[in-house]
Length: 507
Image 1 (cartoon, rainbow, N blue to C red):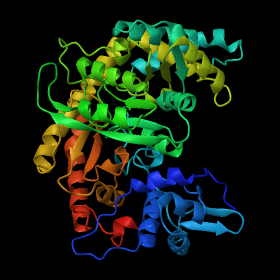
Image 2 (cartoon, one colour):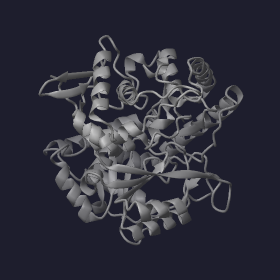
Image 3 (cartoon, rainbow, N blue to C red):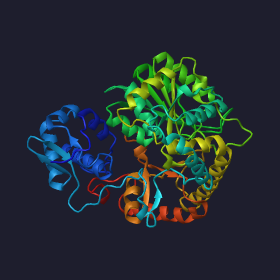
Image 4 (cartoon, rainbow, N blue to C red):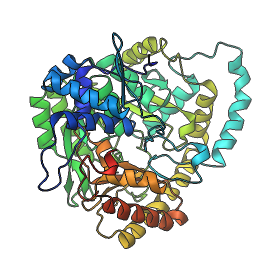
């Protein structure tokens, strides 16, 4: 029997299946319902979105959740077993698998293994290399401090005090007065989001999210059986206080908050992932007012808040969203991973002291606390090197963004994108080429790509991809040439405006 990684509840699997779109070619006969279901499950497994070894619901349970007959689900399961994507044992249920001889699924949002980095162009993970020499110097200073901490047990459920002080000081500098007792240090931003999600959300709770939004958060919400409710971003022309590009559709936010009654709102207002959008203070105030009227907690993800590489130095950035909060309804999550280095695995929560204490009490049953040495290094970088580190990283991002702007317009002129004011990526419309087809073609050509539908809670954005600004600027023209070759291959494979499940990309 499988060593199951997770058991997927029927409602969670139903929502995950709904994100997989299977466009029909013009004039094609409608595929049988069992085949559509089998194909969706197979795609989720092969893309790594449904873990290998995940236990699936019983046939009757899934049939009820999907509104299908039990015969349809049973036939789909049988097809998956015949293809090697499902194993079953009487009395033990069914669990996902891969056909014998298949390579494990590659997830574009997971880092390329070190031994493959020379052969694969990674346009999937949006994370920068460490800022050197600053990281090494901060690490040396942190090691000098370590003996003072090594005399104790090393467990700090709320975080090492020196780092809590540094994070609180940075919030204050950005216009949000903060004390250390409002800060909880976590293992990365995803660790922070996990703690908050566990504390605030129950099974079936609705969470209003931007569309598109951060792929890992959307997946975590689905697997925890929360229900993402997408609210589309809209393109706006330049106007007072903003330079155009994606913005919140406040009329739609008010409609969703009033009609769907979500328990929480999750937004990324500062150099949004994946679009790079920057939301002005007036829009933030209006969203907070709507959320307050609906009784919804607002969870603000600030992991990219320091990455304003396209904002002129003389233009002030919006204050943190929590600085506009009059009802203590905002919980802020941040991270050292995007500005400093992802290898530090340091994140944080800013919230009311009572919630910080509650989160610290519950976390001891999972991770106890973040590594002490990582916390000391992050504290050194924030306290001593932050201006220099920001200048270093923003220059790198700005140069890469300029190089991608030129290369994409020259080599892929039919693709469309808006140059954002900051962040770690370009959000690119591929002129009708399926993002899934591009990702599949990239697997064969050695280009790792994140298809746009990973960033939609309902399978939207099939004809988009996210391009991270992580390639060194001099290497961008060659990277875009490989991307253009991958696009041509995807079109040859039938990836123009999607593909039928009989095409190779769906195998």
